[in-house]
Structures are given as C-alpha cells and as structure tokens.
Amino acid sequence: MFDTIILLTGPAEHSVFTSLLRGYNPRLTVVPVFTLEDLMAIEEDWLNRARLIAFTTTVIMPAEVLHRLGYGAYNFHPGPPQYPGRAPAHLALHERQPNFGATVHRMIERVDSGPIVEVESFAIPADSSVAGLEELTYTRLVGMFWRMAKQLATLQAPLAESGVQWAVKRNSRHGHQQIRNNGVASPKTEQQHRVRVFGADHFGIVPSTNPHEFQFRAVLPETEIASA
Image (cartoon, rainbow, N blue to C red; front, side):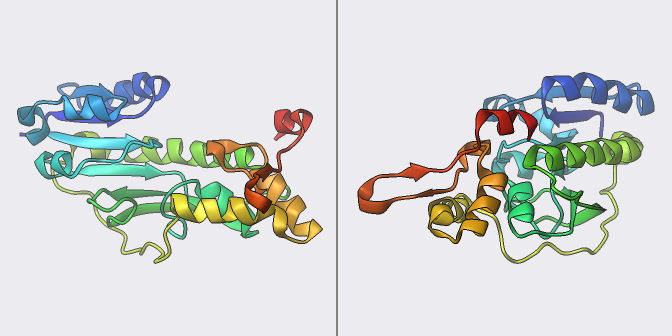
C-alpha cells in the first residue's frame, strides 16, 4: 500500500514540500533524507511502501534502493534533456545555447536516463551567469514540483511519460576536466568566455592549463564573483 514518500532534498525544501504533499494526502508519511547514508538506513518495509522524490540533489541513487521502492522514484533535474549529468548550466553557457530548461524523470540505475515525465524550457537571458541561470532553473523546478505534487502524493500508478528523449552525450567529471584543462590554451576571446562561465569556481570547475607540470588556474576577481 502506497503511504510513504521519501524526500531527498535540502532542509529548506523539505519543510515546504512536506506540507504541500501532505495537503493533498494527509495520511502520507514523508521521510526526510539528505545523504546517501540516510538512504541506506531506510528499512526495506518502508521502501516497499514508498515513492522517492529527489529534488536537485547530487546523491547518486543506489540500485538496491531503486529496486526495493514499491512506487518508483522521480528526479527533478536542473537542466534540459540535452544536458544529462553534472553541472548542466555550465555547459549550456559554455556552448552559448539560447535556451535552457528543467526536467522531471523517473529514475533508473543509470543517472539522468530514465523516462521523462515533464520538461519546461525557457530562454537564457543575455549575459547570464552560472549562478543566475541556476537560480532561474531552480525557480522553474519549484513550479514543476507544485504542479505535480498532487500526482506524486496520491497516485499509486507511475506518472505518465512524455516520450521526450535524453541526449546521447552525457556530462561527466572527465568531460569537465577537459574543459578546465583546455581553458587557458585558447584564443583570448574564448579565454574570456570560459573565465566568465567557469571562473567563479562552482564545483571546482576552473579553466586551467598545465605547462611543464605546473597548473595555472584562471578565476574571476572577487568583485566579479560577488556580482555573478
């Protein structure tokens, strides 16, 4: 019997989202989890009765947890289907994309590859920073959660799937390292663009080069980081 939601997100989101979900289903138990250790500590009986919702988390879902969930798992991903994987806002700005988005999908073992339930797209504002784009994306994800909360809290059946497909190319730690390591060896205009996108050192992603086994990192001045 579906009576539990495991909510994997931050403390601030948890309090608000719990009230929203229980407003649609007062009998619902909402279990807060914040770390991988929290997930692994949940008893199998609870997993069998539960649906898991992950909201802008970096925690990778263990296969044994996914397989024991009785009512599936859904992830709110801060990027469009064109950018599965880590730090999608960085890559979209790096590639000078005109549009970005947010994605809700059913979770399977491979990260950001499960069937897509909903996508919301929007234009990237001119001169947007990584922080600015991530803030816009977060706002869209909150709106999507609000719209989908009733289904997530009450439907025992899986959520309807849109048929939209993920991009084949995936964003990985190795890919970001390549961007970082090639950043300073580019023409001046490209260096400036890369520093504007990556220079605030989000997730440790900084343009750099490694001549003679020394690493040189290009970062924004503190005054520009504060305004980014």
